[in-house]
Structures are given as structure tokens and as C-alpha cells.
Amino acid sequence: MREGKISTKVSKFKIAIIGAGASGLSTAYELQKFGFNVDIYEKSNQLGGLAGAVKLSKGKIDSFYHHLFKSDKYILSFLEENNLNSKIQFKRTSTGHIWNNKFFDISSILTLWNSKLLSNWGLLRLLFGGAVIKYLPSFRILNEKLIYKINDKLFGKEAALKIWNPLLNYKFGKFSNLIPYSWLRTRIQDRTIELGYLSEGFETIYDFLEKKIISANGNIYKNCFVKEIGFLKDKKQLLIKDKVYDRVVLTTPPSLNKKLLKKLSYKSEQIEYLGALCGIIEFNKRPISAYWTGIADIDKTNKSNYKEFLAVISYAELDDNWNKKGKPTWPLYLATYCSTKQFKKFSTQEWKKKMIKAALELNKLTDLEEIKEENIIDFKLSFAEYAQPILSPGKNLHPNPESANNCYFANMHNIFPNDRGQNRSFYLGKKIAKEILKDFSKI
Ligand SMILES: Cc1cc2nc3c(=O)[nH]c(=O)nc-3n(C[C@H](O)[C@H](O)[C@H](O)COP(=O)(O)OP(=O)(O)OC[C@H]3O[C@@H](n4cnc5c(N)ncnc54)[C@H](O)[C@@H]3O)c2cc1C
Image 1 (cartoon, rainbow, N blue to C red):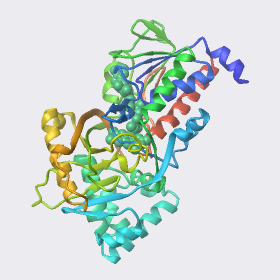
Image 2 (image 1 turned 180 degrees about the vertical axis):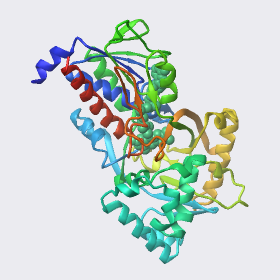
Image 3 (image 1 turned 30 degrees about the vertical axis):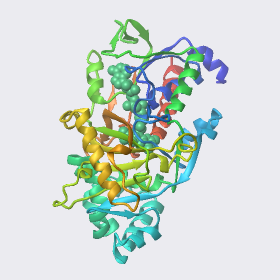
Image 4 (image 1 turned 60 degrees about the vertical axis):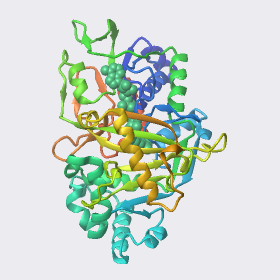
């Protein structure tokens, strides 16, 4: 069927989307391309969800640090399709690693070797394991194995102890023993040396999509929290805030969907999520020389504050435009994953204190000039309750663990075998729009 014909046929169908993050907006965009009528409901007054931005003294940056890989083909082809590729810039960045109160430069094989983090044999084993994962095709039999059980064999004992096991523990906490090899494989296979970023944050893409969707007669209802989804008597159409829809796309996690869809026959696997906590301290002096520094300190005698965080990310080391105008500043992210309960244990002021202490300690581990509290210009704290799904073999590792009549699900847990990411949201947008089109072509 020609596209024009499809458009006239499907334009009578109304689709609602819950959530205006990367998944909701990209799905709306793809549905509109087929000619569907789209309404989006967003509980916040800002679009972009996890990829939204905050304002610092010099401009906007992502509230949670983001970058792209060159292999992120779905989001990159969207940018190309809309002449936005000039906005994205790719850069080779530096990477640090904190191991037992010492900073190691692990940006390249040479700097890693020079850093003496690993013995020569330990380095060789790590490189061998990395190459096997990167270049050999995926083995089904390995995909569902638990990483913590095979890390030693893949990378050798030393690299498992100093790099991979702490990374797993810091990132997934009590869930670290549930993470499958497939997660590790895609992290290594998809990663490219150069990282892509958007000056003023990825929100730029979502602002663009907002305008595009509205200009194609879509509606975006901001500050509009959806509490439940009902249905008409024949159960063929769904109801949101008294509006009738033919299909609903949910970008919310299963624990919320269970409440939203309690009137419909909703089925789902139990999926745990971790929240993400991210503070940004804007300094007027350079605090850390690497863009990304992973924290992997397992020394129990070390009581440093930085041990509460998974990584420290120095934004201006990635975005070359940041300091091209005005007085130079260095926004520093301190990040970790935790539950809402853990986040709520401390007030914003208490988190701020902890993060500042951690940043000053980390600065001391580098060769850079010392920074002090008076070098701080701004501070922003963000917390998102649903940021990292935990998908484990045998429990919930499934391409689409949710189902309900006339509903489609596009969220971070529909990612197997990839890690969550904006690229995946753009892939899901295309996939779900096609599925909905197919669904209506039967009518
Ligand atoms: C710390 C961190 C670092 C990351 N780094 C990267 C990276 O480097 N590169 C990358 O590509 N990706 C990265 N990601 C992942 C990326 O941010 C996500 O995969 C992507 O943004 C998910 O988009 P989403 O639309 O599926 O979900 P979300 O962004 O969570 O969007 C869901 C939306 O639904 C809204 N909503 C929720 N409930 C309701 C309701 N009841 N009614 C109405 N609206 C509702 C929310 O407000 C939100 O806007 C990172 C994520 C985190 C947390």
C-alpha cells in the first residue's frame, strides 16, 4: 500500500502515549509519519524524561549525563533524517579509574599499561577477554550466564577483581549477582572509542520533536499525570481522562502500569528498577582531568565520601563548546544508582555536602591544582525513581514481559539484550509504530 493511502486510512485512529521521554516522543513521531492521530500525556512540565536538561550558570546540560556511540544507528539516522546531525559532535575522551584511593588513567591500552593498575599478565588477560567479547559473534549459551560467575574466566582474576566486579557491584548493588552476560556483551560490542554529545543537552532533540509533533496536529499535554486507563463497554477502545483512544502506548515501568491498567487484563513479569541519583557541582576551576572516572574502591579501611558514588563525570572534558564563551566553568556529575528509600534517607542539603566532599577528595587524587568549596558556582540535584531495570535470566529476561489488550509497551526494560539508552528508544518508536500499523491493516 502506498504511504498516502495508509495515511488517509489510519488518520481516523487515535493513539495515546503515556510519557514524553525519548520512547514516547520517538513513538509519536513514527506514528505521525504513518498518519496516525497522536496525543501524549506527560506528568512533568518538561519533556525528555531522563534525557531532560537542567540550567547551570552558563547554559543547559543533561540532568543525567548522556553520550552516544557511533553504533547508535537509530537515533543517529533520526538526526540525519531531520538535518540535525550538525548538532551532534563526536570526540575521543579520557577515562579514569579509582582503585583503592588512587587515580588511574585507563583511556587507552598504553595509558592503562603505564598506570600499573594491572600486572602485564593481568592486562593481557583483560585485553584477550575484551577482544573475544567484542569480535566473536554472540553465543546463545553464554548470553544467560551470570556475569559475576564468569568474570574471572573472561577477563582473568586481576581485572575481574579490580575493574569488572566492583563495576557490577557499584552499578547494581544488591542485584549485581543477577546480571546476565548479554548485558556485558552489548556494552562492549556497542561501545565506540569516540563519544557523541549535544551542546546544551539532548533535550534539544526532544524540544525539536515537541514542535514537530504539534505542527503535525499532535497534542502534548504537560503537567498531566495519568492515574488510570479505562475502556468502553465493547473493550475495543480505551479511555484516558474521558478521551477515547484506539490504542495506548505506555512508556512507564510495570509497577506503575499495574496501577494504570488495573481495569484491563494486564499481565507482566515482576521487574525491579533502580533509581538514579545525580548531583552536578559547577566549579570555576578544573576538578578532574578525565571525562569519565569509574569508582571501584573496595578497600574497607578507606572511609572516603566518594565511595558512595559509582562515577564522576566532568562534562567540559567532553563538550568542547562549553568553555568557548564566557568565563570557563567545569560541571562535575557525581552519580549513583539507588532505591527511592536510600535517596530519601538524606535531604538535598545533605546530599550536596556529601557530593562536595567527594568531589574535593577526588580532585586530590589527581595532579590538578587543588579545588576548594569557594570554587563552587552552582549545584543541582536530580533523582529519577525508574532509571535502571534489572533483567535477569530465568526471571524476567524476555523481549516484552508485559501484555494488555490494545496496549503497547515501550520502555527501558524492552531492551533485551541491550543496555537502556536513547538509541533503544528510537528503535522502539519505529518498532511499535510498525506493529500498530500492522494491527490496523487487519481491520
Ligand atoms: C544516569 C543515567 C545515564 C544515562 N546515560 C545514557 C547515555 O549516556 N546514553 C544514552 O543514550 N542513554 C543513557 N541513559 C538512558 C536514557 O536516559 C534512557 O534510556 C531514555 O531516556 C529512556 O527514555 P524513556 O522515554 O523510555 O523513559 P523516561 O525518560 O523515564 O520517560 C518516561 C516519561 O514518562 C513520564 N511519566 C511517568 N509516569 C507518568 C504518568 N503516570 N503520567 C504521565 N507521564 C508519566 C515521566 O515523567 C517521563 O517523562 C542514561 C540514563 C541514566 C539514568
